[in-house]
Structures are given as C-alpha cells and as structure tokens.
Length: 209
Image 1 (tube, rainbow, N blue to C red):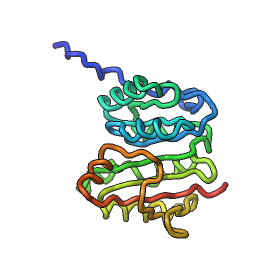
Image 2: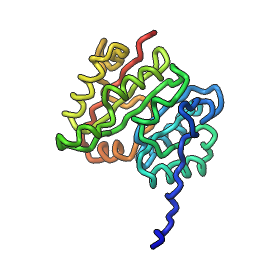
Image 3: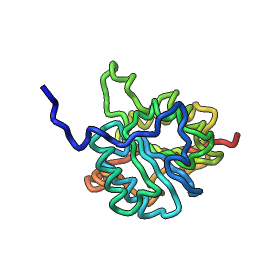
C-alpha cells in the first residue's frame, strides 16, 4: 500500500558531504549563531527581529517543525540570514567548519526524558560540548536555559568541568544569570514567564585558544 505523502516528507537538510562550511549555508560576514532544538521556532524569529546584525541556524530533529519554522523565517524576510534544518545536532555538529566559526550557541529547555534508559538520548553531553567548544570563536557564548532545577545542575556541572569554558553570568566566575540577555524568547520561555515559573539560565564564554 502506498503511504500518503505529507508536506513534511522532504524537510530542509544540510548539504551533502563529510564537511559543511557555514558560509555555504548562510553566506556573508555577519556573526553566526546556532540554536540546537528550536522546536516551534519563536526564539529564532524574535532573535532575527531584535538582532539585524546576525545570521542564525537551527537544528531541529522533528520534521514538521523544521519545515514550518524554516518557511516562517523565509516568509518574514529572514531567509537570507536564518535557516532551520532537520538534523540531529549530535551528528551534524562534527560536520561543520570552520573551527571557531560560531559566535553563539543556544540550547533552550532540552532533554525532556527522565528515565535512566533514556540518558543516552540527552542532547547536551560531553561529545556535543566538545564540538560546541571547537566551533565557538574565542569569547563566543554558550547560553542554556531550563525550567527543571535538576537539569540545570546537571548542565552546570558538565560545562563547569570543561576546560574550554568559563562562567559569564551575573557574578564573577559563575555561569548563573538571572535574565535572558538576547532580546528573544521561545515558546516555552514565554509560557514559563506567563505562568510565573522559574527558569534556570546559564551563560558561558569560550576561553581563548
């Protein structure tokens, strides 16, 4: 039996090849940012509206949202400096070049799985962190948000222990930051703020090579 085709059968994907240059994805000289797991994409849309001086790319594993958000960015006039690709960041990051080509990486409310057997599915692990460190320029920023305290503590322990990152939060040598400083919020952050729920935020800086 032939399966019914949907509009999400051919989501946007990175170019083929073992390596992909950032300039081949979004040409230009503007600072390049990456969001891992943009979901419904509101952060990327708001970021494009508030920061005309950046290029931004998202890796979204769900076909539907990668299609819809990529289309929305194009409709709103940002297609020349913003794209979303249906990619697993754990597989896509090692393909990106050049080293030091990213200025910021955003990870908002990741890893919803709780059971121990799902730990292997976590987005932010040592391998991904190593790739982020490779791709960030000196002084580049890693911004992480979650509404789960245990997750925040887990991420903080992981990144604090990494030799290539240093805290860039509200207090010296700490990554903890009270407010989102990037002029954009995603769907879940908006909902948490509207409901008065706490959001735990971490901001790191990539140490100089």
